[in-house]
Image (cartoon, rainbow over all chains, first blue to last red; front, top):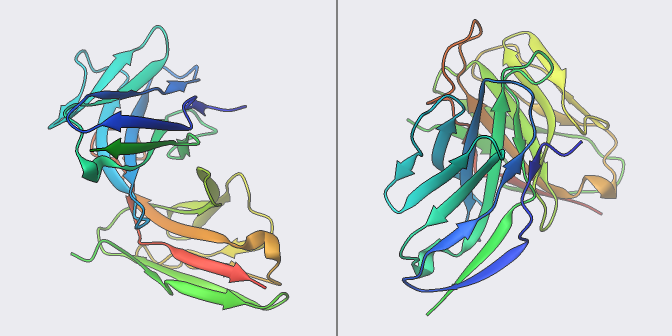
Length: 117
Length: 119
């Protein structure tokens, strides 16, 4: 079963606008972590932001913030003030502490973001 | 620190050939992973390791083998290459306390990837 779902295959956003990338997850483990990665056209995977299941506050890292809604099992990434360099594929990932999944990262299918001038 | 280093960056194989993708990390991470990424798709886990001498299958292990003789190295072996193995391969590493502990600061660090074409 799909553990991480990213329903937006692609999005266009204008420079300086904010964009929200959706991510929903499926787990019965109370202890888990959610991660977002950026993959520009050059191909490398860049870690952006982390949210823990027990964290009381939404994570923020510069222009990146995570809208964490635990009851809805969603962890949407918000990029504020988009820049041309934000054009990339974005992946949501989860790490659980269950016996079967211990230590493994499970990735969503990704969302392609194109920032236009 | 070099982080995670993969070699080679590009490779073309003929059907039936074999090769080893090398992966080394210098961060003393206990976990290491091999993923493949097909065009326009997400990452699928091939194999992973929780420490030297311990490996386990991921979602798509068929056609691959791994070994982990040291903390630093985690090579991926392709035997009898097939066109379906044409993909970009990523090695990654991370740290996790095996007895528990928070998941913060346990993000995966990725190598630059190996683009493999089987013809």
